Image (cartoon, rainbow, N blue to C red; front, side, top):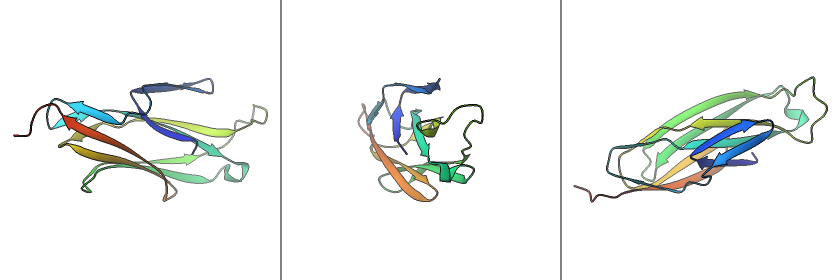
Length: 133
């Protein structure tokens, strides 16, 4: 995995990522429950030995107390385009919205694993503008 980032918006076109507000680390909300929807942008690299092999990318989001807010899995099999010459790198882009309903302040973690091996955690904090009642 070359990179994984939480952002406001991302697109992939003509071999390039365009990412807006990459590296989101905090969300300030008006109160709870509150819905946020950051975008997860991931670039997965492959070597020729990986071509045609099935892989599973799993993304989970948890509060620091262990409550799981979201879990999503993606089946990925990379086959390079036959019509293009040999590339310098072989990769696939994954861009996915992560709608999350937050219930309280705290630190949250987005865990990304490829074939059951943890690749990278991304942490963010949520904080309410209003005091808890």
